[in-house]
Length: 156
Image (cartoon, rainbow, N blue to C red; front, top):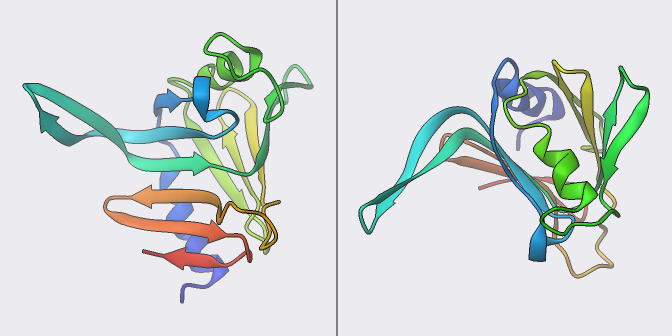
């Protein structure tokens, strides 16, 4: 099993990479994902090509997006998640922003710091006593990592 320091190195592969796509809003509620890095072909179907970023960050647990320059929250997981709601629009503001660095705690909470001054803080608050098994998920070039509801790193 990978230790915390080695996992931090894996997560740091997001550094200096651009947010290509923000998938948020609508029926997903507060769950969202970011495609980060170079655009890779995911699949070709029916004459269409579908792309994804080289890194995928998907959040199921509690989170907050903060603007350090404005010294105020941009949005959080309990806001309106309609397609034009404050949560969705706040997350969409990350589109084309660049990851500066990723911070990781010993309990697998993360902070993704963006060059714009925004910080995405993710709090692993899903425990074994809830139905959801995954706090957050990270994919990198065919390898997948998740933090489960026992606050354990799972490699797939």
